[in-house]
Length: 305
Image (cartoon, rainbow, N blue to C red; front, top):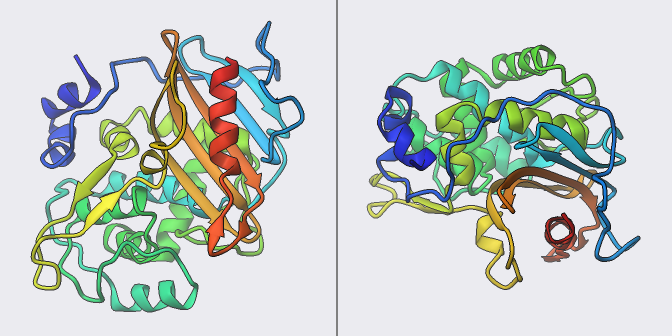
């Protein structure tokens, strides 16, 4: 039974399954424990020394062990990978994902002022929690993340406080959040290892797993958008022109800021094993046409395993 099918039959899963395409996942144990830094025996990068990412971390979920850590404990700005925790924390507060959670006008203005990526909603739009969660995870919308935090937690500050609380509970010792959208901020940092641990823990939640692994989603019709807003994964939508033969990227989250560079956190499958792959700090290049180092590095890692 696929994960999507399994969670459609649960109270938690019914909240997200209504508009979600069938996923490619099969049920797998996702609880992991931190292990010593090692390289998998026989592992060799296809392009030694050519990785553009400053940090690369790979965890074998199936065998519950670390496989690769290159600067895995080096602190870095999280960019929109912070939205992984934003979404997880919001899920803890929401029982009915179809309930209204409008786009905050103040949040919208802050997102525009911060030059955030935007999902495409307008101030005051009568979105649901489901809409905002997909907009945060797939489109990485700043207005969606801030509005989600305000509607779920009462304020972005309250959400940030809980994000840090959860990080402490999960042993993310090098992670500290200062905002929900991931914009560069003093004191906000994480590591590739911590991001991988975050993903491992969060994927135990069925709704989070569905959000993480959905390629696209159509938001609810509103007066501003009678046909809804098409939200596409900033990870899965990028893979069409790359060679992924031999493995499957099941889902993921992207992040980009000036301090963070290009970042990807993905879950992939190869040879009967599930892997969490985190790459951070690839150079952006031209802001109008960013480089693809985070994609190339992720795929190179998967080919090498």
